[in-house]
Image (cartoon, rainbow, N blue to C red; front, side, top):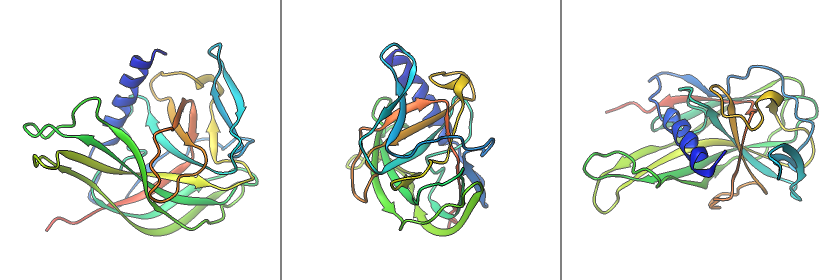
Length: 235
């Protein structure tokens, strides 16, 4: 797909990720359908090959960070939080021998039109890690459930001196060894059909305060990760 067309698809997915959520608890992220089937860890990645096919390539890294970038043309928040609030729980579906994981909060931003308050097209930038948890073990061939209490933000200012929309997104970072909690859909790899999952990866893993603009996007891979979001109460 041409870079301009790809950017248009990605922009659509990001808009869908900003659809407001419920004021009560709600699980966002992957639909968690299917079984994780990746047989590799951070040392390997699937990438677009030179002839247009998908190939396995060494990353030469022992750690990585992944975020779910949505389902194409589906209005389901999977990365960006829909409002300011708290993440109160996470769920991760793993296959055999998963690596240790860390909950990671990535902050992105867009410039804002001070007249309309809307994001200015083409100004979205991602991301810097604002929070990284301690590593924790994942349950092999099952679902890991963890309670957390992490503050997340989605704020917009039309003030002439600020003019920014800043929003947090949820990601997972992984250590060396093991199989990543990814569901690979061979028929969807490289596809941009409706409902196709999108994945973005970073190598090595993103550390707190570490700005990353070198993420690699690929369609057809589902990060099996959900998060329980609670919107802040308005006063």
